Length: 595
Image (cartoon, rainbow, N blue to C red):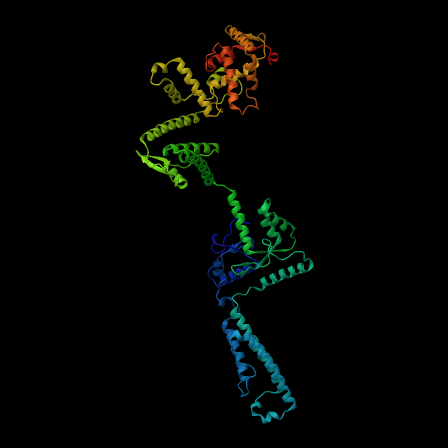
């Protein structure tokens, strides 16, 4: 079954489409033969091979089947009129005698033909019996009555009723031909008769199903004060077209069971019920499939929901003001994040004017828009004016927001260098997966040193800038991208976990400078064993992983322990160079004993 029904005349699917039945399709085939024979309009139309799954508009069907009467009659109209004249002449010759007419005039209108036939048959029977009796009993009465002298003999008078009946029959047949618009072929009638006979035989033999509509379970149904006829279709063809569309759907479980249990040769349905069913199936298929337009609309709605939350909480409830440009930047940032999560590229431009229209549609009663220095800002509806201080603060906030979004965008667009799985070297660890963008370094140099060039060039400022920059990169990527600092930190934590339960004799110190380091390690291990042992045990524990504050506390304890090992108790974090020196300067002599 096709998803959409198309009219066979105009090839359009709009409007109400009526499904073919066996009778309507047979009628259209016969009309098409007539149109091809007389070279009429619509002669090139192609009819479907079967009536299931095909339909037509009511107006198109009327236009197609509306053929003039002269093309539908099998005999010429003149011959019919001549035969009528001959019959009427023979009857008028009989009525030309002065005898009162035995029946009324046969040239009556077809509308009164039925009453005329009944009255004439009764009158003819009584008059014929009277004539027969009078001829047999009183033959002399013919001589005395001049108005009966021209009557025929007994045999001819008896045959007169048959002549009258022939005339009446001819009038009835002619009137039926004038009234009937269409007469199907004999072969088609034979087929329908055979189908009816087969159906009657099955009804008489089995009688195990009721003739009702398979969709509404009703035999009689009205639509616009008109009774809908029941149409019949081949059961196998009907099941093959309907079952694939309803299998596995709970909504049509009852219809599915009914069709599976049905065993009759013909299945009944109302055309209106089947059209509604087809439309419902088509609509469900269309709604289940989402195209790109639906996806883009859904993504934009998700981004607008975040802006709506800001307006409801901050503007309407708290009375804050926002620049429209600021909200637009938040909207675009949220939209880009949603598109990135769904691996879709943004193919349209959403301006601040579009955002303003969407906000007005949703919050027109609760907010107002002001224009100051060619800048639009949104405020609660009870504000009548905006102070200059508020406007300057909004500009500053917008500048900071814009700078943060630009840096975030720059970090997210950085090229990532994957580290090799095998044969990884110290150089790979020192380089990390990404390099720090110069714009981010300039931002932190300016943030820490300001305009003081001397401080910007100091080693301490440079170390802090690199440390903060790497932390920001790691945080923006949500831990999925590791900088050299975080790679060293992870390796150091792993090594310390291995060392925490090992004796100093288990290691061979290759660098003499590390001996003091290991002594410090042993001393600090004995002095604060319980504290850092608990931190190493619980750091990354699956049961405590959701408690971010406690995990951060464990991490700080471990980091403080490492700094004490390096005699850097005042350091904020572990220096990357010292970590690398520690990793490259010792080897485990006995791996089994070290764990």
